[in-house]
Length: 184
Image (tube, rainbow, N blue to C red):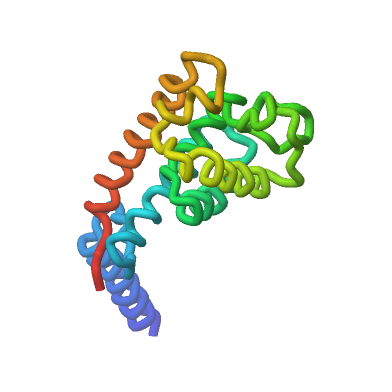
């Protein structure tokens, strides 16, 4: 009887180890993360811009890094470059780190003394104001907005610097996602 139990145990052990080894050969040593994005081209572009904003804001430890959706809503609602508002925040307050206390105003809007109730409210209001007071009146590029927004001649190049940083991050994310997106 002991021989039968030992034989059954050895067979089960063999099957267990053989099955485990076979599974490793099929799965490989690491898994590739793939994304299934059932989005049209415009939706994919906006999705990547949102990921880009979140990534760059996280890199700078921005206190409003969870507001990527608000930046996207502002840029689509008010027809702004999606990287304009976060880039202005980078220049004006080092991405919200240096602001008038509890103002939720990383844009230096009203010399930084205008107070918003939340980051999202500030993003929305400044986006709307940029549209109504700048874009509608013909100031579309950073260079056209600069003399109205700021007295500093260095403002536009600094905003452009951050916009380029967002663009570089977008290109990296685009490459990564293109390699890992599956269409179903």
